[in-house]
Structure formats: C-alpha cells, structure tokens
Amino acid sequence: MAQRQTYTVLVPFPVGRGHWSTAGEDLDLLDVEANALLSAGRLELKTPTTQADKAAAKKAE
Image (cartoon, rainbow, N blue to C red; front, side, top):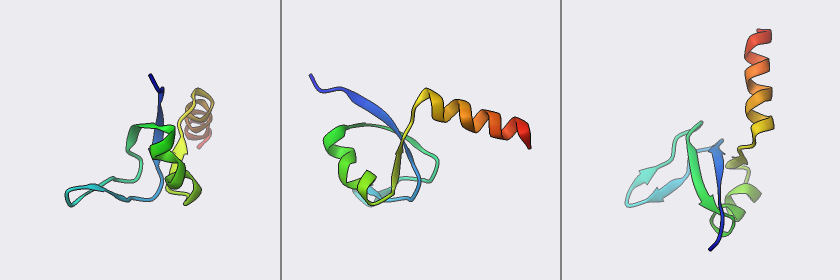
C-alpha cells in the first residue's frame, strides 16, 4: 500500500465539491496527489525538522 505523507497548505486550492483548503492546513496525501501541488508551490512537505525550525523561530521572536 502507498504511503501518505503530511503536507502543509501554503496557497489555498479547491479540494472538491466547492470546498477549498485553507493556508496552514495539514493534509495527508499520496505522492501522486501532492506532486502537481508541490510543483505549483501550493504545498510544503511537513517534516519534523520543519516543525522544529518554526517552533525555534517563534521562540526567538
């Protein structure tokens, strides 16, 4: 079975039936589903490193 990965929405896009994603929303997608959205700059792969970097940046402020 294919693995799903967690992605963070950077730019909202339609997700179907008139609904849209929201910026900052986390989505579990297959690589095939995320490929075009990654290329368009609408998603970012959520990794433990990314989460730690953002938390450190918030503490620094």
